[in-house]
Image 1 (cartoon, rainbow, N blue to C red):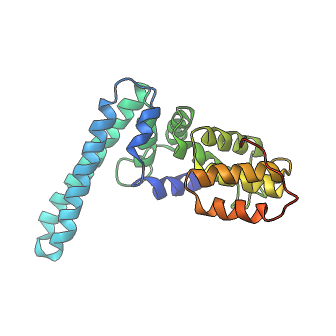
Image 2 (cartoon, one colour):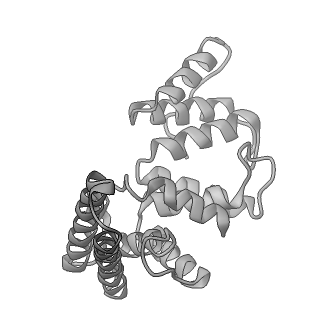
Image 3 (cartoon, one colour):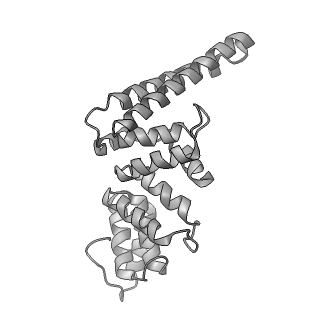
Length: 218
């Protein structure tokens, strides 16, 4: 669970609103309200940092309480959105509820929210299960088949990170059967999605003229 929390903290401020297009909920008002509260919290926090020692301890505590209040309201909105079936709201609730900036959710609730988000095609949620499941080199996984399952799900949602990882797995024969042709295809797909690392990997393998290439990464 700790790895999931670390991964969430890495992404909480970089979640793209475009994820909402994959949202299965027809009403995204809870999600929008949550974003608005997070923005307000950030604005108050920025004000607090700018003022620094220019304000009294009491004034600082008042502003800090406002920040916390905004984050807790955001969490409440995201949880309501998740209850209505919003995948992106579920992911945001899991992120905020494990960040320490709002009320701490239980590990069981966080896992349930992340699973909801992953099933709703939120790529970051899908990949969080992968990173929690395996070590950095994918030599040890609690459930290798589950990791590959979510990697491939993320690839269908056009994740360059997932495609590059699958290319690495095929190249080295980890979790899947070694298949250089498929590795090249996955690196190519990842590079087309913007990964410079995958592009380098693809070129490296293509320099070996004996390697062929498949049409798709799967």
